[in-house]
Image (tube, rainbow, N blue to C red; front, side, top):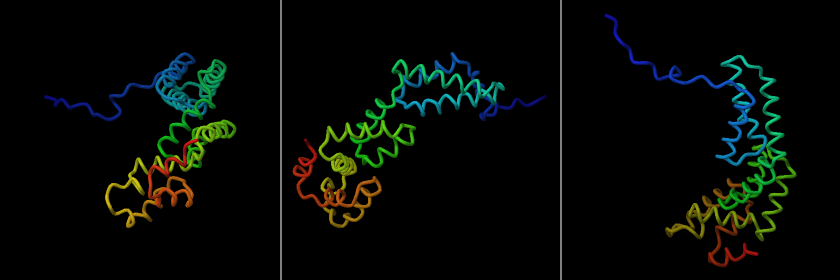
Length: 195
């Protein structure tokens, strides 16, 4: 009698990737844009991963898949489904609210493949909305992490250097970090960031 073995839970249970046809890639792109905000470059990377998986599994042509991807991106840009400037502005506001410095925002957008002109426009929009974007972001970060004047325990002076280092790691300059960490009055500190 042979012994029945349980199937291995490794890669055996996975379905093979679908073939990267123009229609399939377009459906993937639409599904992705419904779920996530994306730059043209990040969508290109997602679709090219699908093309690569299809080429390995089905021996499809990578160049043909790349041509499908470029066609989809061009059509989505023409119909405004994909707009790097709008993506950069939305992502800039979101990151700023989380307490990310303008230097770090610039780096994150560049990593997503957003062009320098679109990044500059998004940061200019942020400067129009906020008197001092880096100060406002540093305050938001300090509030979120409960450091500096937002520290609830009485060990504020002992934690000063650590708090300054936390803000420095987030990309804030020493002057801004010191201004936030050494603030005595939260209301006065926050009033300096409004227009």
